[in-house]
Image (cartoon, rainbow, N blue to C red):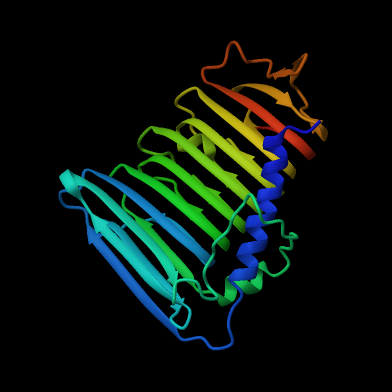
Length: 309
């Protein structure tokens, strides 16, 4: 019997993806505008950034300009209006960026009851929707510890987060194509990374550079790559829960890894691991300088574990 958490993950992924695609479809008349906001970091000791973006293209990366943040929105003024709020009480900066549909509940509104809706999943229109729905570009500075929260509907996202001092990362997506990279190490320790992915093609590379203490990953339907390469500096724990997915996990050869697996109708391939009941260990688990402990819960699909240099 499939646990309720896995059934819910697959069903809710389909709901969110279908609703985002349905509700974000472009209208016939479009009036494109550009909105930009930027700020220096004087007097700001910490930063929390929350982005809510229904449909389009999303790019997040580091800023070499010395700014605390720099955000640009290219949007259809017939359907949306940009909303930005900022405050910094006691040096704790809070930035919220979102697009609201004109009229509150028009064609662009995304109001989803994940428990009640049951829409068919279809990602074939994602490219058209992303290309015709505008874009959001966010650049973050390299000096201020930052908590980053991204809530994205139907989008193509490129997240180049290496070198940004990220204390935490939260991302929720609907129907999405996401490329997340940490090409260089995070200069601060990350307490928690939470990734909740709906119907997706999702790649995360260089996760060892994120320096997270804990990773929680929930995936619904799609093709997923989790690459834990990078410069490890600490032990970490990861919880991976998925519905119907094709998952590849890539781990460095010198990292000690333990996998506890609860799975049902899946193909599981972990060459080079030592199996003991429902636990798989790398041969260097006890001797490795750093260890990654993975709890893996899946319902359907395929899983392959790969060791990398």
